[in-house]
Structures are given as structure tokens and as C-alpha cells.
View 1 (spheres, helix red, strand yellow):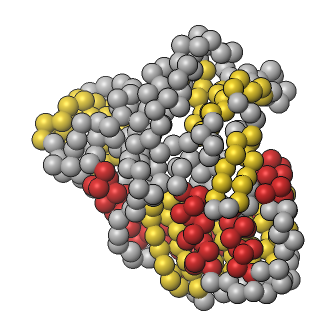
View 2 (cartoon, one colour):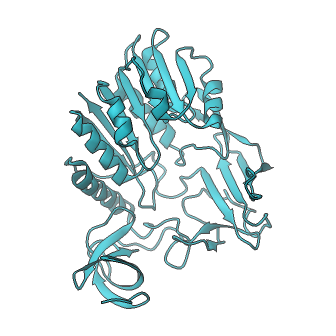
View 3 (cartoon, one colour):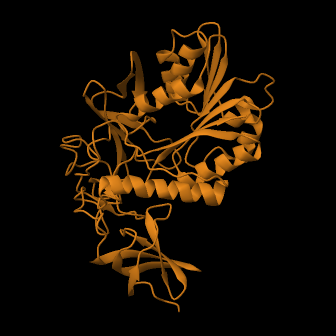
Amino acid sequence: MLGLTGSDLILTAGPAANGGSCVARHDGRVVFVRYALPGEVVRVQVVSERGSYWHADVVEVIEPSPDRIDSLCRIAGRDGAGCCDLAFAEPASARRIKGEVVANQLSRLGGYEWSGVAEEVGGGGPTGWRTRVRLDVSDAGRAGFHRYHSAELAEDLNCAQLPAGMLDGLDGSRWPPGSQLYVALDDDGRRHVVQSGPRNGRKKATTQVAEGEYEAVQRIGGRQWQIPVTAFWQAHRDAPRVYSELVAEAAGLQPGMTAWDLYGGAGVFAAVLAEGVGESGSVLTVDTSRGAARAARTALADLPQVSVVTESVRRAISGRSDRPDVAVLDPPRAGAGREIIDQLAGIPRIIHIGCEAASFARDVGEYLRHGYTVEQLRVFDSFPLTHHVECVAVLTR
């Protein structure tokens, strides 16, 4: 059966898939259904046909799941922004679903059996948790969020992930078409808005501060960072503290030991690793971002045991004869991959963090291939109202 794009079907949604859809079937063909919950009977519209499988959106819920609630985000959904794709799921059920998705990916792609639920991060609930956001600007000069897999923007900025007032005054404003707005709420409660672009041919996009400053103050414990508004920092207000505490405990470092902080960004984990190894130990933190390296050098200037290297992880560790007691990795969404993990093989203790379930599962499988054992595995609901998660594995050999 071909040419069904735009057609309506009635389907029963099966288990949740990685990426925010549920798996259903129609005449033996797999259909990935967006905006459904497992077990629901739904009317869907086919939006794309890709060989052996289709993608469809829910247009009517005929038999709802008991876990369905009124959406917690008023701008999300099929005809809205692509921000909060699980805002219609009761938060505890959403965490259970996320755990099931990670478990499935670990089993299929990593050859590792695990069960559990995604843990809450902090105690602030599923809304108002985000402290950094990027907006795109339309041809009409209005800031907005992208609709799901679309260049079109939704110009209502009242996303439920954001604290009240975070984007006040930015909607309806006139910005240069094609530019981007980076907005951050720092740990002093100040808002910073930086405009980037638009690009002019091959020239690098220029940035200018529209409000506040170019760098935002971020704190973890008693340490302070100055992070460019355009640079990476964990979006969830409690995530840097939660992850730092986990890494400090899981690393099990003693004075005089050595540690690597790979894909280390501004050196958040390097700070707690340095505390563990003491002045007689050493910590190497590596990232490709010059801005992150500057922030790390400034924030960690009082820690002579920390070396900050601006380089790719592959080049930084290739051919090194020294091996650390502990390595911490927080790679981008694509994961670390076989080449990097092959180079790390033999390090007695590794803490691996992943923000995408499939690539995380593949990386876990690579560690198992090298004889590692999973000592601990946790999944965090670091992006409430969405299908995204953060996963942490502690591996030993």
C-alpha cells in the first residue's frame, strides 16, 4: 500500500520508541506515532512514508491512557512548537516510559539488561526548570521556537520548560531576520540576552549583547564560573550540582591519583576530580571549545593540579603512555564511539555520561566488549516534558 501520506488511520499505540514516538502497526508495517502514549487507540494522520516504516501524528485520542493529562505546555503539540513532546503524560508515567526506552536501547544495541525509571533532578517539578534557551528569528523579525522538524517558527514563547518571565519582552520584538537569540538566567537571577548573526556569506556570525552581559555567572558549591551565554551549560538548573555530586562519589579518588575529564567543557567535573586527587594528584580536562577552555582556566585557576587542553579528545589521548586511575566522559549526542573507547580500554574506572539513549547504549556495548562491568547505571529526567534523558554508567574492570 503506497501513497498514504495525509491519510487517516486508526491505530493502537504500542511501546514507546527512542525519539518520542510510540510504535504501532498497520497491515504489518511499522508506524511511529507521535503524541501518543502506550496502549492508546488513536486516529493518526500519516506525515511521511519511508520505505518499510511510516511516521504519523495523533489527530484524535479515541481511547486515552490513564496516564494522559491535559498538556502542561500550552504551546506544544502537533500544531504548535516542537518543545515539550511529552507534556501530555503524567510526570511519573513519563519517567517510567523513559526508563523503558533506555532499557530497550541497552538491550538491543548494548547487549546489557537493565530496568529502572528516570530519576527526578532536583525537587522543582516538571515545569520552569530551564535556565538557557536559544530562539531563532523568522523572516519577519520575530523570535520563536521551531515546530517539530520544520523551519517554521511558533512565535508564542510561553514554553512550560521556562521560568515565568524568562522571555518577557522578546516576543513581538523586531530582530534581524535569520539571527538567533541566546537567553540565560544566571545564578544571581539576572537575565542575559545575546544576539548572534545573521550570517553574512561565509563570514563568522557576529554577536552582540542585547541585555545583561556576554557571560553569565554560574555556581556549583563554592565555585563560580563565567560562562558565555552562547556556550554550553546544562539547561536544567539543578543538573550541574546533581551530576557533580554523582561524579565525585562514583570516582572514588584518593590523594595522589590521576583523572581525565574528557569532553570536559568548562571543567565542572574537573573541579570535583581535583578535590579528590588533591594537590599531589593530577587532572587533565579536554574540550575543543576555546570559550569553554577559557572559562575552565579562570574558574580553576586555584587548582594547579588541573591541566586544561583545547583539543579533540581523539588527538589529546592518542598515543599517551600515562593512564589515569579514573576517566570521566561526557560526549556529545553522537556518543564517544568505538575509536575513543578502544583508546580508553584498560583504565580501571570509567564514568560515562550520555544524553541520547541509543548512542549511550552503543557505547556501553563497546565497554562490555573490552571486559568492563557496569557497576552502576542511572537515568535522569533532566529534560522534563520531553522524551530526552541523561544516562550515567560507572564501569570497572
